Image 1 (cartoon, helix red, strand yellow):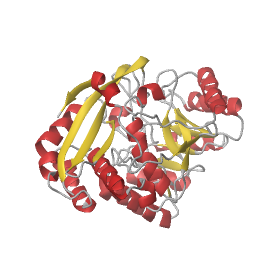
Image 2 (image 1 turned 60 degrees about the horizontal axis):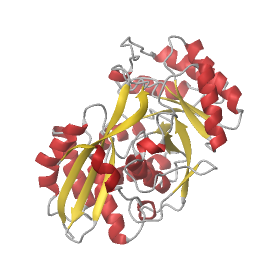
Image 3 (image 1 turned 30 degrees about the vertical axis):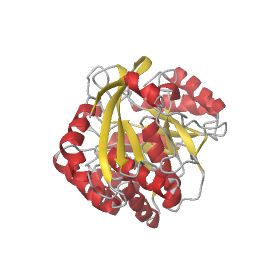
Image 4 (image 1 turned 90 degrees about the vertical axis):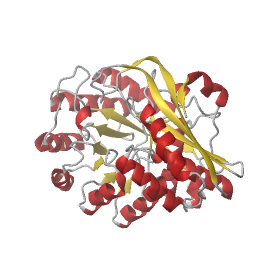
Length: 386
């Protein structure tokens, strides 16, 4: 079997109202620009993948596919996954930093050729992964308490909050309000969004930088509220401070979604920078390599819980990865009604990936990623393609 084409398109997913990401200094977003990738073979199998490429970067991926990725992959056997990964690493180093969605589409071909879901090819046995509702906006404590109570009633067993207040007391007050609303059994995750310099700003453009002392004090305060982990409390390349914080914190420290390439991920693991590592199959590294990274992390008694703030296609890839890992006990599920909902994020799929009443996302029965594109829904929202 040979790869005969690599196609990509940018689609625009309109939000029901402007979305105000906690990490975006540019202000409200009226829509998400996402990408969809298809890898075609001479045997008629087509692998698919996709996700959120970040603000304004979709056209950059299209150019990388046209000028570099398609010429590099044409004629290759999709089962040569390691060789393909190395070619994508070259692209990541010199052309476009996040070509990994193409690797997910290649693996989708492999799964379809074998007639098996990817998680089973990688040795996974669980047919469902527990999801937590990942909020994206900053809202006041009372509103977030209501939001968390609502998603708990829908079946979610965990919720992630964004903390971006001026003071530690304000951040802790939001978490305390949510804890009081949902009770002791629901998991609460807290994300400070400090890993990337651009994201350490409020929507009005003012700086909001955490230092080591703020991160540690916050962790200590959150411990009393039974928080499951504190995510991205410091810049992603501040390895020494991250190591010190992880050793000193009374709650797990998580991060790694913005570290690119297997080299950086291994460095984080060797230095013990985190208790929980969060690489993303669409953004961090080739998905097969992330499966290997997860196995090494498990040997060091560290958890891997992938970042998955993405469209339904992006969630699909990370869901397969999660189900294959022995040290993954959560799936990040973007959900922040009334804006971030499956009707928006999963619009390109014939069957959205939706948690059941117990908060579990079931693995699709189909081979590869187990999902199918809804081409009728995709065509009207396509704004560019190659």
